Image 1 (cartoon, rainbow over the protein chains, first blue to last red):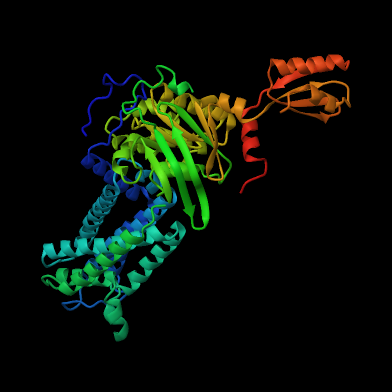
Image 2 (cartoon, rainbow over the protein chains, first blue to last red):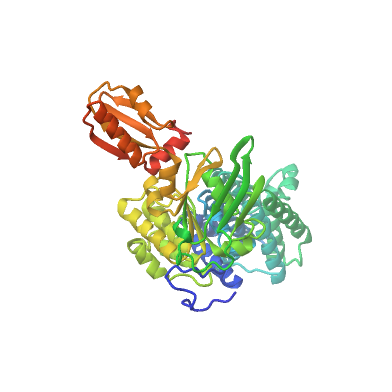
Length: 270
Length: 320
């Protein structure tokens, strides 16, 4: 259906019926823009997605709190080389998982999803718009964090295609898990659990604390976490100039399939 | 019904009903929320769905909106199946939920504009905002709107896409009298412009003021349907009340009255006659009084309100 001017011969009053869905691309664009504004307008979300990653990056680069493994001997530049990929992974997790889970959980709770379900926008259109909003937010985060890291002396290596692939698969994996949580738990439970998981994965997922600091037995399990696969994969490429880190890509792909599959199966709209 | 009078529904191409429900059953676990409900909603009319809490009103409306899958029965909305034909139906209906439905941090005008963007031929948002008195809070985030402002925003969102049929779930709950009248005016205008409206409400005066057709639901079924006038006339007996000296002989009065009548002394000297209240019955009562030397001052025919009918049909006990 195309949008034409209102006021045709059939219309006699202000409210005279003239129903019709807007063209799909317009609906999805509008929804994505709205979702992005909602994400960026939320102060607590910004704390999680922008302030914490930036602070961690600056703090741990400038102050040698945790001894990080570096390629070359010493120097501030090499500690940021270790940290920056982990912080990028954290940024992806904060938006795709924590932020999306909390926002969607409350949208479900307050009937936003219910109301949208009877709008002309199809469900897959809504999910597409949400994904776009997450990706836009991530682009902004990555631009900011990259600028900060470069200012701190970061010298990234590697294949940009591998980086984009890792970021996209990581986003898919975390989105699936976030939506699964938002669609099955109560909003308050999602709020608490998503923050707790964020904190645990921040510490135990190789973001700022190298996995080698953990006992050997723990390392093999922690290495299977999506956050560990993402930060390790990004580090392989950006710090060590590796090609395509297949193992990490594989782990992320499995999480993405499991998470998105479970979310599609168990997500409750009300 | 007014809906069938000439000129009130000029644009009903298929002539089919706006909503047609036959034998709807909906269970939640072991609880049967809707139990074989039949309801037809005319095009271009305002239909009020009344019922005590838990009667099955919201379940019925939400089945029409495509939220609930019927366990049995047949539901057609604008001739379409609400679930199988959801994509075709959604642009044609407007929905106002009982509460919520808006992002907590979305501003009122922003949300209404967004809803308009999802439709091909939306109303002028600025005019609608003016109309519903939302101008002063257009930039206020939803969570900081008053309850009444939130209700009016939800109503605006339901009509902005110029739907053929709108579902309003308790549209005036919690509104002050001014906002209530603004809502009523809007519903009347929807009807005048040919939009079909289904509204659930707890307010009998709202149904009396607005509805062409009233359906009273209880225990998951429609127990009465008709225009407010029909329901008040036919659904319940009317009564005649008069005062006289205490202790009149009711038995002798009953002998004079038609067989299906009843008479009681409500309080000392206050009498009520139940039955088919017509001029003949009034004359019978008056002549019985004359024979018995009673001066019936304050003789009055009591016309039942919709509320009387409702309470008579659904009982007076409190519901969960």
